[in-house]
Length: 314
Image 1 (tube, one colour):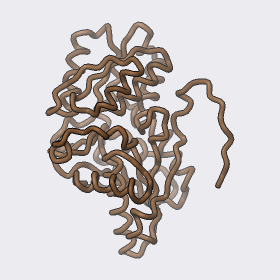
Image 2 (image 1 turned 30 degrees about the vertical axis):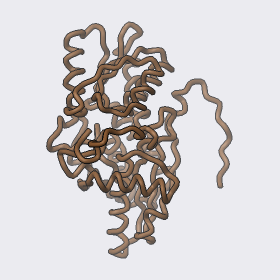
Image 3 (image 1 turned 180 degrees about the horizontal axis):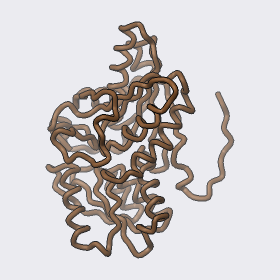
């Protein structure tokens, strides 16, 4: 095992990124000729992959003079980006207001408020799209009060993954990687990481997974055909779109905890299910390979879901 010396940090924001890759051998034992890795994004200080774009969007806005001390940062979120905005805002000294569906988990509501964020709730039945509509209304009514980064349209979102996630994957597995897969939410992870991996000297097949149905229970993910499509999303960037069922994502989350000691959320379960499916296809074809995916957040943020959420939608 390679030992890394402890780092001395000037700010909590310096702890974002450089997350580890974990090889998943038990849940991927059906494809023994293929390496399957999950990038453990819950190792970021805010506990999710969303720390990367939140920090990048805030830093870029400050450097361009769009976010100043007299403005309140406001955005729509299904939870993790809100947590990231909240703690980064606290660390850098900017007030944060969040609009989120009322049915996001209690843990996410509590965590954001710990950092001093103000919460406004949108309809639970409208999911993230309802939060987007509400935040646009608030900003239109108070344009001088708010800075609205708009994670769904902000190019700094995918750039965080282009310069961070994608490069870190190449640093870790280099020429061994053959496939990358991640599910679509804002689409920033897929867009930025895929663009960077496609620049590599050898071909890397990049897959965007999405919920198989409009009414789904994979919190934070978007069924693009029935959703407000993020402006940063370009369907021509990924090499393939793979539909994932709610049951598959939830069941894989359970398997990861029981078989790998890895307790992650259901979007991570969907990512790993897709990665294992790709690995099985490669194994059957006798090709071998190396598949990398994203473990978006920890599972302890999902301890108190509503009973109907798995069957229907967030």
